Image (tube, rainbow, N blue to C red):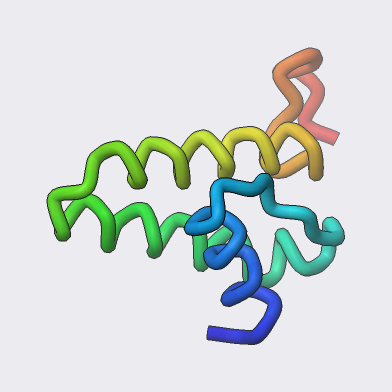
Length: 76
């Protein structure tokens, strides 16, 4: 895991929102947060898993990950 991804996971442990650039989020942080949530699920820590997935959702909206909810019919 890269240093930027470690900082993102550390923010979750501290209870702070993850702050990152769009490039860092798309290239490494998103995957690290999803893997962290899976690790929490396997460790029987559903609360922390939900927090991690909620943060992924928030960052997806902030950094424009995936298809836009406002215009799902526009594939451009």
